[in-house]
Image (spheres, rainbow, N blue to C red):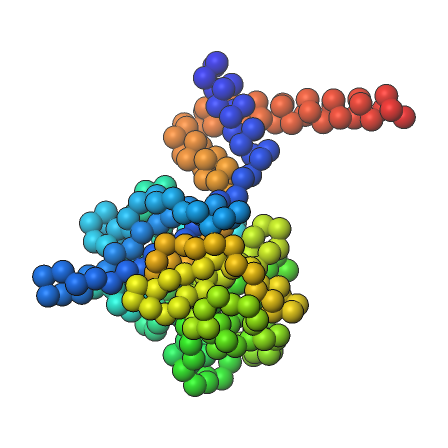
Length: 302
């Protein structure tokens, strides 16, 4: 019983603080034995100065290295989804799930087309930017099928996509020297936005993501081999860009997640039904006690 109380207290404390963690992945091609190989790594990033810490290599089924070009966390379940590079030696242009604690990837299915970045809307719908046709694509999480939205256009630069808490989607279809546009997630229609100004490199925008506070982040790349990458912020109203710092070469995705949510799910997954019920009861009582204390304090002030 004592251990259950400790578990409940830990879960309660965890749920009260929902710390956010920023993740990025790198995609690197190198020659080995006369063949090109793909190496993908997962990093956490310090938002204040872009300092990155290696978490693990990204391995499909724990064996084969894959390169990730887009990463996003489901807003409800917290599950990370990613898209693989067209250069990947196995399962290219595919949708996978990713364990951000171990780097282990599991295949969902082939996308059938290449994407440059992905993002969830607040309802849990996944969207992908299709640089080959400059279109938005809706991705089925069960089958990985991609439905292009809106009329196809000419092939564009590798672009990033990010969706804010209100469901407004932003894309960079023309790279770092283009504009920050809005795209309607229902119709796929683009609305041209402000020109991007102040990018460290004029080449490309590899990925974008919103912070929990609503700040738009992006990866600005010089397109080299290896590619130098800067973590930057973008003002959604003016297009003004400010650099935060340098990320590992070939970084190619951005995603935020609540670390506490992962911890809670991991803890609950190890509990039996009876223990889970007891923990839920203890948490409920703790919340009730806190509520009573708040009400009591308010009455005294009144």
